[in-house]
Length: 322
Image (cartoon, rainbow, N blue to C red; front, side, top):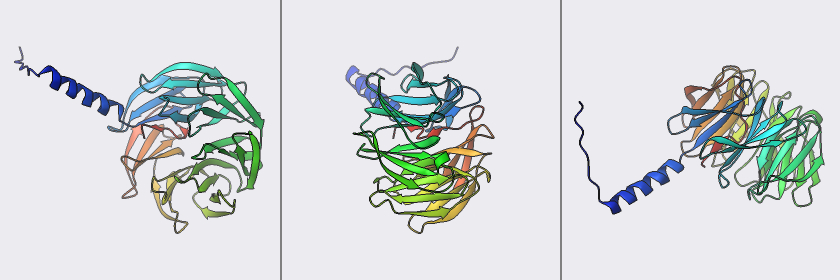
């Protein structure tokens, strides 16, 4: 029998230790990776870079949006015509919201009050109240809405419309279109600078990223790799990372110089991408190799590959706990 030694800890000290453990256990970051071919979400603990759970969701999950304040991850199931709502403490599906259409892009408002859903086939945006999951309102916009992002003040929703080659800005209070900006061919992924002053739009068929000044709506573009898909901005707003699906790499953009300064080989057909502020690692989902590549942003090198599920996408902001 193995010899065991027990440590007797005073009750007041034990309570402090337990409190510290509790704080630490809830302070971690996690990635929620949609696996479109497996109808599942892989949860990666970013402190260990291991998958800790695979959650079954609806049919063909694609998009992700997370509210840390609400403790929820929203998953769009494009073929299941639904949104799966995951409690990120228990990592379990607590609700399924029916969507009569093809939900792809998702975004949660900065005030956490509204979930926006891009219905790919019906060319509309749906606003859902996060308090009771009721439909607030909807609007028809450009063709095939995809990526979405909300301004820091929650007053503007930006949508990339793939088949009309433009970006639409919606006033979230009136839920009316206030701007329509022509960009490159087939805009898909979209992101904002941390201060909300620059909007970044990835143009799949133009092989470019359009940068839009959100005050003046003036724009410029940067050439990247073949068939770029999604973009993520560093927490200091100085660097952008773009997945190039046909080059199997990530283009690193210096946003001051407005040029590509590095390309990093990753897995096959990289799609979703997110910058994680605590580790300053970049996480890339690989549709073709069923994995997530981890990039060290300091060296611009891939440091590891995490096996996930079939056809990993994670379209949207897929990291919680920041």
